[in-house]
Length: 444
Image (cartoon, rainbow, N blue to C red; front, side, top):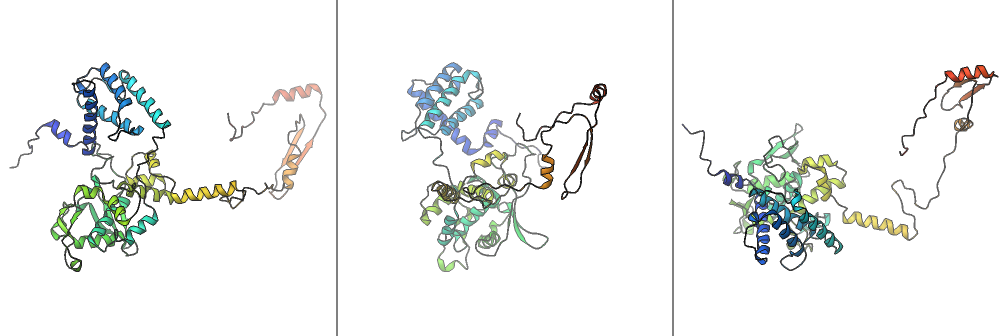
């Protein structure tokens, strides 16, 4: 009988294995940089062995003096991420104070804030290297150059990656690398329309630590026109061109291209090897495509596919709540960093403003011009009748108000009767002062 309990090994090693690999590598790299700085200060101790007061001083000096490998200033966000790495390392080593939260490191945080202000004055902090979304022109170029499509193993693999990124909301490399063949299933609606459904594994925002934190919807790709841009057509061709033994549910989704395949064998032989695609190749698919297509845009990287998805949906008025369900974002605020004004929209806004400053009439959405004179709507007879008593103060008497249809003028009759002071005082004592209603648009 099989044992219900296996040898777990070291608990610390198990916990370390579940940590995000990219985060762990960055933490290790940043801590090594800080240790190098300490060596230059003749400090041989590890950072977790340095007392709080001394470490606070070292951290402050480090923030002011650290530079990149080529001697340039870091971006403000990069400095902030360095402190985050130190915080993770010290927390793992059970350090008694927090760089981010505790008063003991207030000088470090103030130094960071001042340094960020200085860098902003120098023009830093505008994220000049951030990835950008694909334009329609660039996407068409990739298809025209056969870097996307179904005509070769390379273009087929590229198209699969881009489709999975945009329709399933996958991130650049790791989430693609972890995909298995059984994660995507070909299904049909009740009307017979084919679609691909994705079963999500571990992601950056849903690591599995909270069992209740799951996607509210399973991302889907629906068939379109049957062309090489149809995601279902691409998937079916990929299924046929894979080795049969690699179509098991636990097989890698992305397979390495068979580079020994000759052009005349494309119709008869398998296009891919029985091995997963290399992580370095998968991590640079978009950059490689752009270079081969002659697209001069160094900011086109794997993350561009995800940005293209979110920006395209935003420009087509898809609600942010729906976009977040597809992209997997937990916070709607995070979508703001993805959605930005496109080059076409920037050009349109510039032309509108140029037309205004040059004196020509700039059209608004209601087809009215900026220079057109204001118009006044005619006052109806009913409004004129009511305006007769506007601002008037009437004391005493009986009021009779008849409200007729909209097309008829309202009738207001006033019967003023003489009254003695005693009768007037008695009537006033029975009246209640009514508080006037405030306009809902008033500012308090």
